Image 1 (cartoon, rainbow, N blue to C red):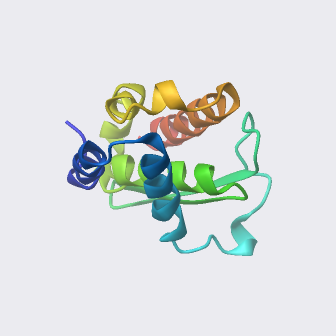
Image 2 (image 1 turned 90 degrees about the vertical axis):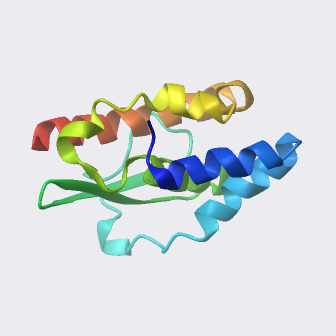
Length: 136
C-alpha cells in the first residue's frame, strides 16, 4: 500500500481523461515543490542515468526517510514530486519494500514516458532505495 499522499495522486489521475492533462498535473506537482538550494546541487547528490540534470538530497531523522530534489526538466521535476509523495515519511527500513515501478504503473506512467525518461525514473528510484538501504 502506498503512502496516503501518493494515493491522492492515484485518485486525481482517475479523474483526468487524457495524457496531456496528466502530464500537466505531474508538471504542476513539480512546480509546487520548493527549489533545492544551490549548495545541495553537487556531484554527490546528482543522479546519473538521467537525460536531464537531477539532484536528490535525502534526509533521515529518527528513522524516517525524506528527500528533496530538483531537475532542469519540468516533467522530471514533476516525477520527483510524485516520488516524494510515494516515499517521504516512510520508516527508512520500509523504503526498499516499496514497489515503486508497480505504484508508478498504477498511474500509467510506464506506458507514457519516453525511454530516456523511464531510464531516469529507474535511476532515481535506485538512488532512493540504495540510500535507504545504506542507512537502515
